Length: 304
Ligand code: SF4
Ligand code: SF4
Image (tube, rainbow, N blue to C red; front, top):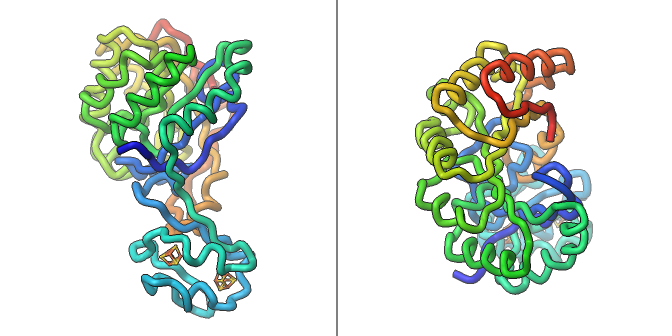
């Protein structure tokens, strides 16, 4: 397959590795974290983004939708995500621009050309491209590998931002082209992990061990979500795992939760389940940083 679905190409990103980067968000993820900032990337298919605040209720989309995916509920226009095929018929029909399609296909050459436009910024800042999502390693691996080869031939450094919930073979395939893996570690207790993300963490932790043994660059990223994993006990469990399994990484980033993605849920027809989550304050983050640092000899940063 030559094309892959992408929701966004974010330029001048400074949070997905070293230097100035362009981050590519691929569509589709094996996890469904309740705090996900990019719910539009969870589905593997094209999907509709609906801006309710722009909708006047004219019902033109409803009349033209070939899938009968649009209806009116309690006086409001509603699109059934399961029926919508992303055919785009309703996009031009809506004169109020209340409807958009999330997910665009790019050929490898087309995407490489787009990413190469900022090569000068990558070179002057030791930056590069970050492949993210969703989960890039859950997409078509022929596509991903060929894209990475094209970028490498042009001297572009590549980070892979992964949730780790993929077969080891997928990670192994991109190892030769990856400068740094940004590897998420969320919760150590497996059933708790399943509750908050939809899957247990067995495969994820095994993959982290294998990656560490492979000797590649790893930045471990821990989203610290108030009410989920912001206690010292939770962070100690992660620290014990990293210490006992002798995980070698370049650094750990503790990323405080924020709810900026919550507004997107309504647009994709999903319900935000993180209403009780909160942002840990600075003092709490510093305590967790100090706690985790006791277990490992590479630096623990807040943010990044
Ligand atoms: S066409 Fe646009 S404005 Fe009219 S009902 Fe559909 S979304 Fe709302
Ligand atoms: S994208 Fe196509 S299937 Fe989806 S709501 Fe619009 S017209 Fe219907």
